Image 1 (cartoon, helix red, strand yellow):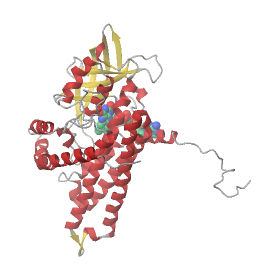
Image 2 (spheres, protein in one colour):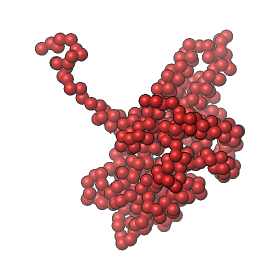
Image 3 (cartoon, rainbow, N blue to C red):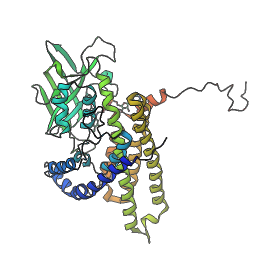
Image 4 (spheres, rainbow, N blue to C red):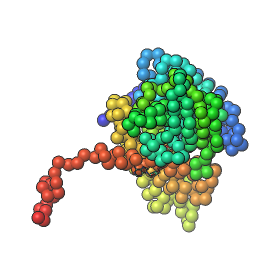
Length: 413
Ligand SMILES: Cc1cc2nc3c(=O)[nH]c(=O)nc-3n(C[C@H](O)[C@H](O)[C@H](O)COP(=O)(O)OP(=O)(O)OC[C@H]3O[C@@H](n4cnc5c(N)ncnc54)[C@H](O)[C@@H]3O)c2cc1C
């Protein structure tokens, strides 16, 4: 497999790097000040306009057909761009590449009718609005999506929705105008065909944002997390995304890219954490030596590099499979990186925190958020255990037994 970046991808990366250095990074402190004060980020619309004028827009969205939106970048070509954006939690929004909107765009691009695309996808592509995806429920173990219990009952030309969802990323954003909701449309069908996805406007009567949630004390300022109730919410039939009973199919189309993009961004964040360790450890001295001169610290940095390069190769292979074999062909690789990358992020952030001393856990560095983010990704997008189960199930059984194995010496009879 050849993982050299194509010249096109390298050109995009250089262009993005220039814009990032010139326009995004110098605003980081202002972004932190705005969000700490609980204000909207006033410079964001202007910055987005600049990014868009520079052609750095909707980079994560593949072009499916002539005239469709997107940059025509493959997932492999997008990987280094996502890494660069991952260095700052808020950078993806500048380029309209943030979760959960991009996976929602991909679901709409693949499954929506032309009318739905005009009504729901187009405003997302223009960053005029924001969106969310509502699957998880407080009352059922949502690792197993077949448990999802929200009812979506057909009544004339409408569906009537009743249920409760929580940990819905982006649902508490003031500009979130719709959610893609997974619910049961046919309780009598088999477990994998009971569910459907439907587009629910946030302002539909009966939709209520109950509260805003934080995760390990961290606020998601880009896509604030919400808990919602749906009480006799009436949505027209034409809001159904995909056919009735295809809820899991639609969900899977968005989940592959959602997972791989999280991993790519996390790899970029790990690059930053290694840089932070290098600089901090060379600037502090204890007991007559700089901290970076200690074997332990050198080892932490080197181990972080080993793990990061492994994870990057795995992510590139996954991206390449996604490009060549589609969601089904890449399923195993998506599970592999979904388990490997968050655990790596957690380990590297933990080392960085130790290298920084007390400062590492403060709001003066992004380290504690990186640690929380790595921890979150071990649960979000499906807990590790579910992916490990899938990986185990795909492990082939060798065609020999212990007694007749050509690899073993004589077996006691
Ligand atoms: C910050 C954050 C943002 C999120 N954003 C969204 C969102 O935008 N939309 C959305 O719908 N959901 C979202 N989620 C929810 C997330 O997808 C769920 O939390 C996840 O799927 C697990 O569901 P659960 O919380 O109900 O845990 P449960 O299903 O109750 O599982 C609890 C634990 O059981 C164990 N377990 C489960 N299955 C197995 C198994 N097969 N083998 C072994 N152990 C197992 C695992 O350790 C698991 O963590 C988000 C979660 C977080 C933390």
